Amino acid sequence: MKELGFIILENGKIIKFGEYYCTIYRNNQDKKHFHDSAFQEMLSKYKKDFPFISDVGSFHVLESLPFLARNHCITVVNASSGSFQVLLPIMVMTTPENISASQKNALISVEKTMNYFDNGLSDIHSFSEDGQEEKSYSTIDDFYYDKVQYPYHSSFQPVNDYSKALLKRYQ
Picture 1 (spheres, rainbow, N blue to C red):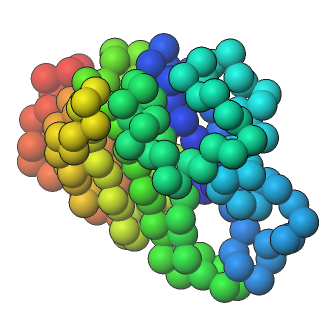
Picture 2: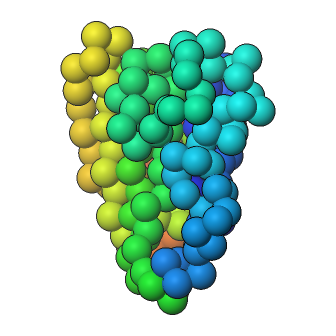
């Protein structure tokens, strides 16, 4: 994935932020190469989409993932590891407990982007509106099966039987 992450608003709008570079290739002067500053730049451009964020300049996305979920946003963060090349794709994702139909459609539309994290580590958490963690997932396909009701097609694993059955149901 070329971005540091993206956010999916309740209405299904997908907003990307930052540029992912392995450690050795990051430019310390470029705000787009770091999660917080890249997210803050995105917020300043899309402020009207985030009325629940009052201080854009000091907003820390990594610390605020549960807060974003409580405010009906799905946030996907690319935390991949590697000095010269990606050695381990790592995704941290937070979602609201109840994902809107528009967000489900958006998640289906970014399935190929999510394939970037196949064969890596996924840390996915769903939060209720009162801030309690509702459920967590360690695989993308389990998340898609449970929350999106869609048979996620991993680029590294064959589609399993429950995904095949679910696909038939939605065709």
